[in-house]
Each structure stands twice: as structure tokens, then as C-alpha cells.
Image (cartoon, rainbow, N blue to C red; front, side):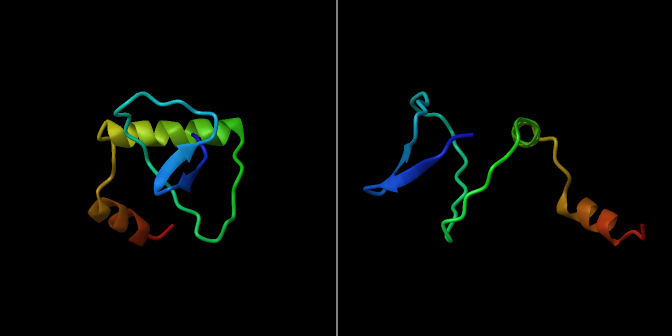
Length: 71
């Protein structure tokens, strides 16, 4: 996970160097709020992203079905 700012229309990361052509995901904070994560939360987030990259996802139809089931 990396943090950066938009400068001249481009994202400039703070202290991170990525290889040319690296694919990134950008989350925009319109209200200026930041958030902190523990090392465990960051690991869980990165693992969830990796699972999605591997195609290990749940379809919207299946998720909706699961959410409609009584607890």
C-alpha cells in the first residue's frame, strides 16, 4: 500500500518506487480524511486484492442470495 498526491495531473507516490508498467489501484479521498491500518489489516487487504486478481471472487448474484438469507 502506498500514499501519494496528484501533482500536475499525475500521481506522485511518497517514498515508493514502482516498476514501469506496474498496475495500481487508486482510492480517492475527497474529504481529505485519512485512515490507518494495523499490519494485520493491511495484510488482509492485500490478500483480498490478490484473491480478486486470481479470480477468486463471488458473483453479485451469489452475494445477494447470501445476504437475503436469514441469520
